[in-house]
Length: 207
Image (cartoon, rainbow, N blue to C red; front, side, top):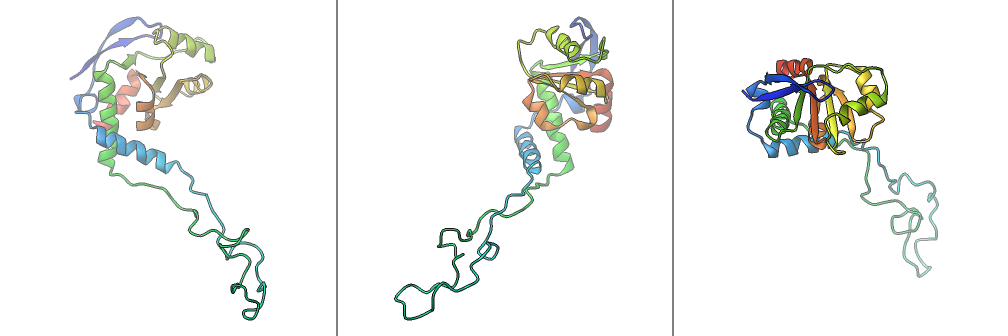
C-alpha cells in the first residue's frame, strides 16, 4: 500500500497514512483518463446552436417573377440558400453532445489520476482544514505555507462549504467535496490536497 505524509495547514509534517492500494496504487491508464476528460467536456456543452433553413427564414412567400418568358433562371423563393438573406444548408441545429462511458471505466480514470498524483509526489493529505476565519486570505495562507510557487492547487474536502466559498475567488485554487471530485479537476490542477476524512470517503466509494 502506498504511504504518504500527512500535514497540518501550517505545512508541518505530522505523520504518515497508508492509502488503499486499489484506489491510490493502480496502474495509470492514460487512454481511459483521456476518454473520461473528453466525455466530461462534451457533456458540459449546451448544444443550443441553431441556424435557419429556408423554411424558417421569414419572407419569401411570393414567387419573385414568373416561371417562363423572362430569360432569367427560374426561382420560387427569395429565401433560397443561393440568395443573400436566404436559409442555411446543413447548418448546426440543437443537439446533445452527451457521451456515455461505463461506470467502471469512469472510476478507473479517477483512480488512475489519483495514483498518478501519488507517483509524482503531488498529493498531500491534510489532517483537517480549520480556518481561523471564513476569509479568502486564510486559504491563501494555507497555500503559501507549502511554497508551491504559483502552481494550481485543488482541495478535496469532506463537504466543507466554507472552504469552497473562501477559495473560489483565488486564481488557480479550487475546493470541491469528495462527492464532486472529477477527472478534469484532478488533471487540471497540479497539486492535490485531500483531508483525511475525504480520503476515507473516496476509499469507501472507489475501493
